[in-house]
Image (cartoon, rainbow, N blue to C red; front, side, top):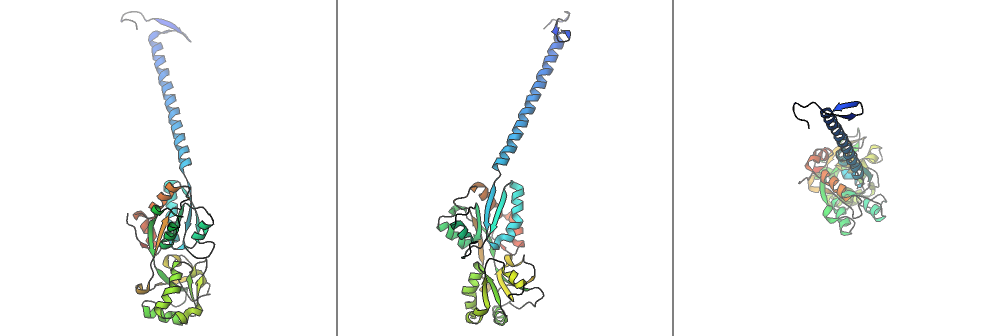
Length: 293
């Protein structure tokens, strides 16, 4: 530093002689520019690292889903993907039965899944077998059985037990599913109505495909399945749910298989599907909400 009143001192610079005070200002500006440069580089590096981390953490979840919850799942899945970045690779199959597509049979063959969505008691069987993590089970929705006829056909009366019985005795043919609702119809409903022998020859369990599809093409006069599986199929008219006194309510639930590759992300998906925020979509598909958290 030079004292007040003294002439300024000069030092050699790239452009000749410059005052020491000007040199200090030049050095300060240079340091500021260097500091700004390194801060910019550090910030860019951190952002790149964040993006890379997000890309690494995003997972593709393999989901096996049974038909009853599928309509709701198709509405909710894209919202989960949009909010988390995780993608969903989904295959459909019944919760039980002998078909190769049935979820228990897929798992038995060693097919990979991060999440299984299925009938609650079928999921419980998988938990007992050690194939699904016990604490991962979440309740999703209740599903009731309904009936359809082909579009344009008269809607029969099924508003009471007696009306349902008369309808089934007089229709030409009856179709029902190979999952929980169909098992109930075949083993219990016909017996409860006292018409098991009378309808045996004209009632058939439909394998693999939606029951409403065989009603829509005219192969069967009436079809029974869970409401959420009937409503999305074109070419049929929904008649209504069967009377509550002979109704069978199927609880849908979901869990994480013990071999899941992405259990953390799978839990996030299950929490979302069972959340109160998801219930408008669930009920819009004909299912009944069971959200408790």
